[in-house]
Length: 485
Ligand code: NAD
Image (cartoon, rainbow, N blue to C red; front, side, top):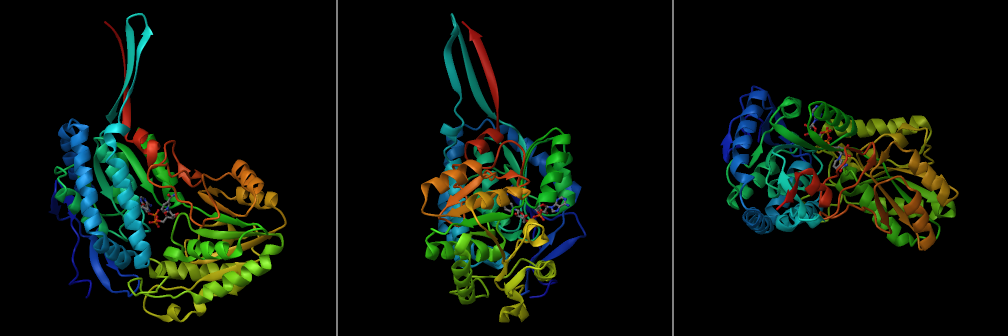
């Protein structure tokens, strides 16, 4: 298929497919083959403004729709997503490149968000105190906030949008999703299935594009709240701009996640989990393990086993059975990764496994094999910066205290894991690490939908995190009633 014959994606506004009023399009390739899958419009402000108008109108009735009725549509949506599980996972693999198994797991994570949101009648309940004084009562009631904008990254085309729109909509808001222009296809299917589940037109709208649409959302007076997930510089920009324009904002950002391995760790488990966390989804996860901190004499056997396991990894098209490591998202990300490998070498780290030497590196897709650097130092760029690719850095330290101190030097604070058999080590880790999502003897400690996704430091800008009770707070506002009868 060539770019000229490929499907041109449309925006989804008021329940219908609408052509963007733009001259600008980008080709969406399958990263495993380089073949064009679709062309995505870079919509204009005008496109965005018409979507906001529709969402504002739809809010009038949706916000007054009884909560159990809204909830029933979410139950139906959940059923449809389950019925289309394979199809959705395949779409994810095609546009993102991750293996089908991982894509299948991602669909599950998305469905779990819908399941959580379907509990809206309980989640939205207020609180009352019948006697705040003689004959006086007081109550807190919960209401939606209005039109909400969601801006999402390429690495989880289903899970991340599902952190946002199902809960926002269940709480009575209307929504405009601006999916990543690098993975825009699945978003259209998610919107289409929600309509099939009975969602009234205009409640969920999808506007494709890049910064013009984003800036339109940030500046539009009728958009009340912004949920963002993406890289750190953009998250900071979104947070500052949205706040300056009087909107509530939650902006989830980049990461550099450290996994500490103690000498008493079960090495088989640690190696299996680290390989999954470092190279799963080609390292393109905000919860990827990008640094291993080896404590004491665990370093030698750990590195030897990691290297051996990395050699066993099958690289290729994620739709092929047994493939574990798919491509990175674009040719430029592959080049950027190769550049980081050169930087690491120049900085003096020891390159013990070079992903540029794997056969797949020379194929058409954007493949780069598992890469390992030993003797990485905190002064190095490969330690400081988020590479977002299958590159693992190993730092050697002498104690848990040193490992925690090193981890805390990072500007990021998304996730961190500890492998040990010791309860007191776990307690020390939990109490002293400055990171929001912790794992003990597991590789990817991503919380489920009913808990908040809780990054710290430069991994998060805002007050209320995505998902769980934080998500409900973010997508609702409260009214206090004090009454004397
Ligand atoms: P990105 O920041 O490039 O893009 C995210 C979104 O912002 C996209 O929709 C994009 O169109 C938009 N955008 C990009 N540049 C912009 C600009 N200059 N002005 C306005 N809008 C802009 O991120 P990405 O590469 O798609 O995703 C990967 C990043 O997301 C990584 O840093 C990863 O750690 C992070 N991420 C974080 C979490 C988390 O929960 N903390 C989850 C997933 C991904």
